Length: 117
Length: 111
Image (cartoon, rainbow over all chains, first blue to last red; front, side, top):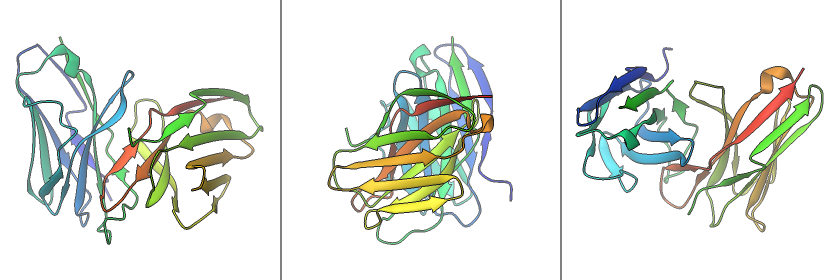
């Protein structure tokens, strides 16, 4: 089992550029989560999907951020235009189907470290 | 904030000693989960305790939950240098599937 796969692992870009982060969840998982980790703010939930449908995007910082899940095996998080304060490690996580909104164990990818100059 | 808050923020102990980490939260929960993060890596699930459970064990890990005090503790017994990592508690609440984390606690186990 390959686990949750994220790409790229590292990205350095200049302010104003578009950034696209990618995630492949574990096969059979129906929930997918995007988190952002910084020293100052810790681990923040940005958005999560259930059965490819965005359920809660209240953590998305602003309109520059968007996320899609076109199918059960792929999701993207896009930042356009990027700013230096977006520099962080972005994690994708997925989980098995759960009942009655009871969250089970999350499986995390290794993260995408973004640096915006 | 609905997130859990870990305490202490950092802990340094000697190999063989026990390490205790605490997590407090503000509202009712479905379950509480503890995760570990090694430097530069993703989080790895350690143990989950449901709101109707009071204690769970897994190997050298012991988790307790006190819903009246809205707190949980993670005990690592007979710590090893390899236990050096950051530890996070994640809170699952209400009918939502999302898991909200605290800022984490850094544990250093000195050989």
